Image 1 (tube, rainbow, N blue to C red):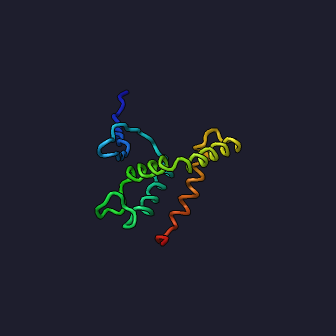
Image 2: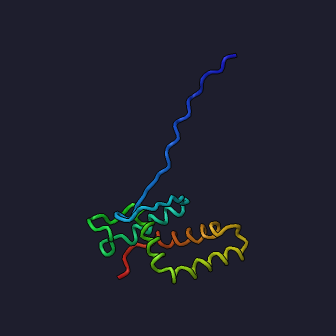
Image 3: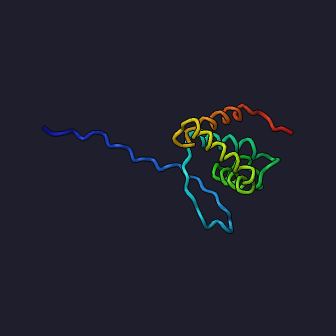
Length: 126
């Protein structure tokens, strides 16, 4: 009995990738993956902070790519690590105390709640 050739599978789409780096010193690169929740949160943050009041990229763009937003968030966390470290430790300790196997599982819910709050934001606090 002859098998009829079925429909061929479509070629897998490459993962959506964005990158952003320091124009002069960007010689060390990291590749990270974000969940859908995290990605949507980054897009919401981009829409919230990158406006005419705060646009480090200059020009007329008010919504930079998510890669640029992530880089700005990372730079800010590194620049203010003294403020960030206690929050990091607090989240890890809380997630372990509540029985989460990894902090990612706890933080996913926290990020979703934070995103829900921010997504409803309509204006710029002056």
